[in-house]
Amino acid sequence: MTEPGPHLNGDWDLDPAHTRIGFSAKHAMVTTVRGAFNDVTGSFHVDFDDTTKSNAELHLAVASVDTRNAQRDEHLRSADFFDAEQWPEIVFRSTRIEEVGDNALVVSGDLTIRDVTKQVTVPLEFTGVQNDPFGNLRAGFEGSRRIDRREFGLEWNTPLDAGGVLVSEKITLEFEISAVKRVDGGDNAEGDGESAA
Image (spheres, helix red, strand yellow):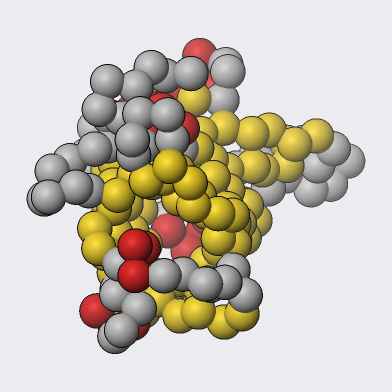
């Protein structure tokens, strides 16, 4: 990262109110449907002196999936897709974090959806660090990665009369992350009195 400075070393918590972990997929081969998980928790540790000690972990509550359509959301929670009752969380745990250029990171790790765990690599752009009006040191990251949902057991589909399928097999994961640095071992993920603005 550009001039990371020692102030970035340490432990960080995702700010759920300002973080979006989403996805997009083609519907009926012609339009894009976007969604997100509204219940997101996560943290990461940064060590620029020894990057092998840097790590990240992310948890998404499957029941919080939101595509702005209640019927579609219920279908996604069902056994046809995520099966939220049996597997209530999607989990990502990093195994390696690399700096590959100015403000550019590659995070590799284990992504678990349903009962399937696969290694994925996510490129992330470091979008900056700033002290917010509430005294929190805040950092931002953005990135995306395409995956094949069938590799995680999400195989439901319906063929179309004119060819193709109702839901695309390739899904784009979308990451817009705001993280707050912990102070004296505390947890600042809720913003320490900050509004959700």
